[in-house]
Image (cartoon, rainbow, N blue to C red):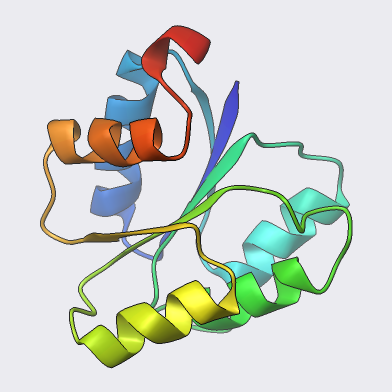
Length: 125
C-alpha cells in the first residue's frame, strides 16, 4: 500500500518514511499541501495520508479541506501529524475531514496505534 507523507521538514518525512516502510508501506513524500495535491492529480493513489499542519504554500488544514471537496479523495484516510496541541486546532482538523490526529513528538508505536484505529494494520500494508 502507498502512504502519502506531507511535511515541510525533511527530518519528519524521513522518520515517517522509515516507520511506514517498516510496516510494509511504500511512501510518497510531498513538501507542502500544494505539492501533495499535484502528486494526487498526477495519478498517485495512496491508501493513507499523514499531513503536517504548519507548512508553506498550502498548510495541512487547507490541504485537508481541498481534499475533502474532491470526490476522488473524499474517503482517503488522513492523519494530521503536528505540533499543534490546542484542542481547538484538533477540533478544526477533525471538522475539516482529518480522521486521526497525532501530536509531535511521536513514537513508531504511536503511529502504529493510530493506523490501527484507522483500520490500517501492518498486516494490510
